[in-house]
Image (cartoon, rainbow, N blue to C red; front, side):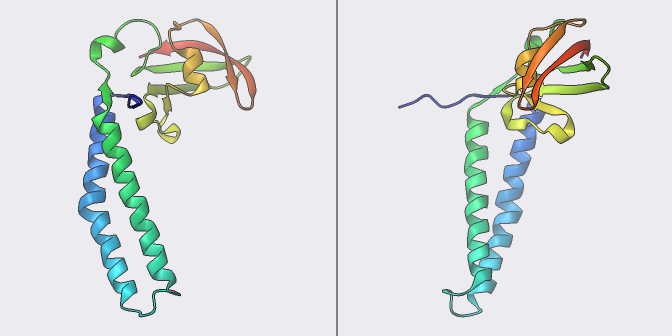
Length: 158
C-alpha cells in the first residue's frame, strides 16, 4: 500500500479546511438533499434535469468532503520554529520584483491544500515557489514558468 500524501499547511489553513467541511456537512448537504427531494416530486426521473443536476452536486459535495477529510488527516502543521530564519520557506511571505523593471509582488508560500493565488497564497509545489525556497533577500532568481523564464530579485521576506 502506498504511503498517503502529506499536506503541509499553516494552522490557519487547516482551520479554514475544517470550517469548509463543517459548512459542507451542516449546510450544503442538507440543501442538496432538499433539491433532490423536490426534483423527485416532479415525477419521471429518466428525463429530469433538475434531479440529474442535484445528484451531480451531491456527488461533488461528498467528494469534496472526502478530499478535505483526507487533507486534514494527513496535515503537517508548519511550526513557527520552521518558519523562522532569513530565507524563503513554507509559511513565509516573500516580496520580489520581476526584472528588469517589473512591479513588486508579494506571495505567501503555503502547502498545496491552502493555495489561493487570488489571495496571494502560492503552493510550495508551484514553479515560482520552488525557485524561491531557500533564497535570501537580494538574491536574483531565475524562475521557469509555463509562459517562459523570468528573473526576479527578492526584496523582502516576512
